[in-house]
Image 1 (cartoon, rainbow, N blue to C red):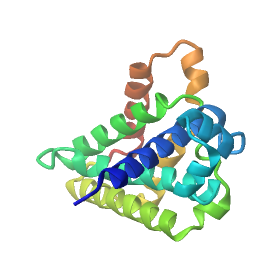
Image 2: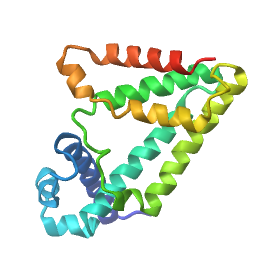
Image 3: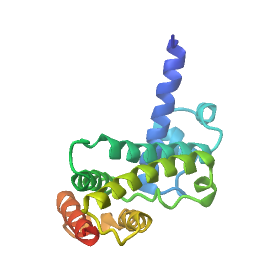
Image 4: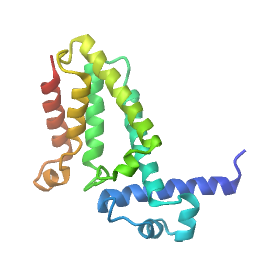
Length: 191
């Protein structure tokens, strides 16, 4: 049984991770300090360090959670749909989430985090899930079989680095961006 103290510790840790995510999304990795996180959460820096020994450890937790959410998003789409429709829904959900994140600079994380085993494991799992969906769509004849799944994944990954904030400032709505991008992607990879 989980004690009240353990539950409070867990809730505080989740709050810290959410705060770091928000700060990285608005300020970027480099500009966000542990002082910023402690202030955002309303705790002392000493309490923050009880949960995470370093900024690197905290950011790693944030990014691994994001990768796990992406993987879960792939598996959450109705398996009764065609692979093409599932991919469309995965893209719509992923792009919508990315567009609404704001001026995120989470992708600009140093190599030291991207080389961590926990990051690499979560990244491989998400890539494996997407690869399986792409290959299934190729078997169904919905995606060009002459294009490697790895190339399609790299193409999709590149879409997520678009400067969505600039596009929103120029007057595009979130739903317009999502619909247009998904349409462009699906046209580019269709058989």
